[in-house]
Length: 224
Figure 1 (spheres, rainbow, N blue to C red):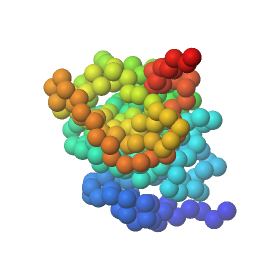
Figure 2 (figure 1 turned 90 degrees about the vertical axis):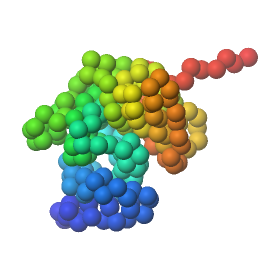
Figure 3 (figure 1 turned 45 degrees about the vertical axis):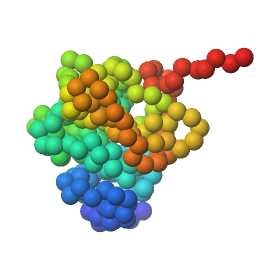
Figure 4 (figure 1 turned 180 degrees about the horizontal axis):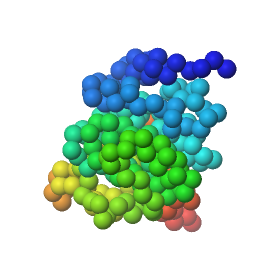
């Protein structure tokens, strides 16, 4: 198999996936053009790392497709110096993008293998911008809160109250809500003091967090 020209692949990702799909923030584009996505997937997927689709990290966990991740990050309006929490960080790609944008990032993961992979992948940053922590995803990281930005890096049926409570007074949470069998809706949730608002951003077929990870599934309705 010929070696992948990763620099060219990243340029193609920007030109064919990001900019045609309303990712226009120059800083976000520059970050995604710089961070090597192939470093965050398994060896067998590196040749297809820049396809516009979600890539498997394990049997039931996925790396968000570039367009979805780029738009979510853009809509979260990250600013250099902001504090961010990435919930379900997987192998660390989203955390690396936010760190590249100048944020201080807590990358939270519950799967031990993914925690180890994220630590190995993010270690080359070497400047303390990202802390990878293991823990229950639905609980967030209260001891490090508040966060200006929370990225929930998968589709979910609902966002736990504990995560919303860890937003700063003007914080922004982005994710894909997918409560039923249909396509999901990328969402921006914003906090203004004690008030929370939400706005639908775009449709997304992002895979859900698996049901084995507690706190993100809606309670089953009563059935006669």
